[in-house]
Amino acid sequence: MNRLSFALVVAAVLIVGGTRGWAQTPAPSGARIMIVDLQRILVRSAAGVAAREQFEKERAGMQREMDAKRQELEKLEEELQKKGPLMTADVRRERQDVLERKRRDATRLADDFRRALEKREQLLTQKMLQDVKNIIDRIGKQRGYHLIVDGRAGVLYASADADLTEEVIRAYDQETGAKGKK
Image (cartoon, rainbow, N blue to C red):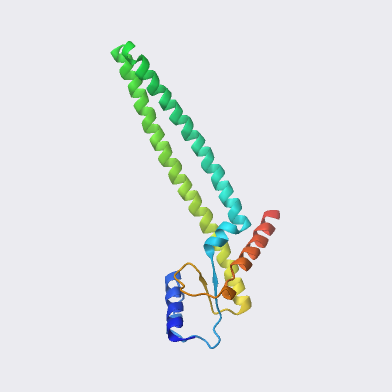
């Protein structure tokens, strides 16, 4: 491994959150460095697909509720525009107050839904990444690899032969399938 390649690997390790001491140690003779594509694992693994489908169901449910709120607001606005001139000032003011209160409630609900979806997505992703990291650690130890990096984290060159992504997906699918059957 030439010095430029080694420097790029060290930079990739540091970007990904590498281990202490690696940058100070010369590359072992015959260093085995592999890559994975974490994004592809999240998208293509069975667990990733299932998590995305569940997330989309939750999002769709929230969207339906927000659509219902929007229709209710539109109906109230339309009623106020059509019948407002015929209402007494007190009734019109009361209806306007109700409309404004419902608008504020809908805005708060939309914000709550957005935050809930962001939190849910983050939790799903963190759980999957932890499971995948454990699998990568196991494969790395079993195969005697010196370094496994995420192929999207700034690696400038990676041989297709060094890509473990499909193997990690298979192992992850096997493990999550086995866990689902328990």
